[in-house]
Length: 436
Image (cartoon, rainbow, N blue to C red; front, side, top):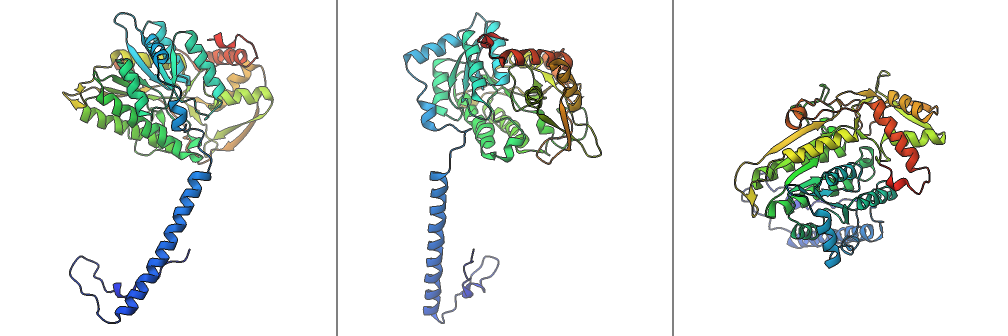
């Protein structure tokens, strides 16, 4: 693109502020140059305006970001409010919990656990297309069969959130809605900012303003440890070297949580999940798509670290994660603000939830082969620079101290349960929705 020619009489302007005088010679030439430059500037401005309009009008919308119209048409009215109230009804001394991302993997399991013990639970989910939404709809059916209503909406929709709090005075929020996945951030970075940062702020803005303020437990990630090489990962370790945009947005979430705790008195607990797996899991996770590809006879790619090193993960079974989430809700102290103003110090925690037993990914494949009774077609390649890290390993001493957290499911046992669910759910059986 050609550049505008500099106006020569400005070359003598001092680099630091001060008084200066323009030369009085050749005023006509200066005016002519000025008008020529202005014409070029106007032309390029018009070009960029047309380009922006072309981009936003003709480019297809992101599948992860529902339109405002799509969000608003599905909520409101007396019947809707009755369903919200009924779902959030709690037993005496029970919690009343708003679960965001309720149709997601962890959200479904946490909602079920809370409902089973008598807590009031209301879900919200935008049912985006990051992975096959049919799985999310199946989870929704499972939840509704057990008395949990999932509102279809986005956490960026502030009027919807305010309406939910108008109808139900939630004592707690379990915030699990997020744009997940490390590699997808290279394809659609905007969805991570929309959900993990803007969405979190939208939720906190509503929570700070309602009376009473709820206590908040939310899902951070082990990804925040990034390039940290000290193991096992402790909450005291540095987290300023994220290896992916996903990790960066989760780290930003922790800093945002600190701000709202400090200014508005919100009680906030962040949970750093370590590679959660199990029934009703996410199809973008390795154990899930490995299972699918092994059964179809497709080759699977296993990455190795430099020097033929192993890539290992601290795989944590969903039931152990759920226990940690519920314990976090039970031990969360009340927020201290009212009317958007802080009245005193409020609880702020960040806690690892892992299994503290890293397993090489190649071992995970061997376990799947055993339970599927099918030999995998392995293809070993060097780990690409796409945001993944070589290993994760959780120090869970703080979780044990704060939550009495103690994982009990090893990878062999957990994958056996997952394979059983997978074969049942994808067998074509009409009874698959009732499988748990």
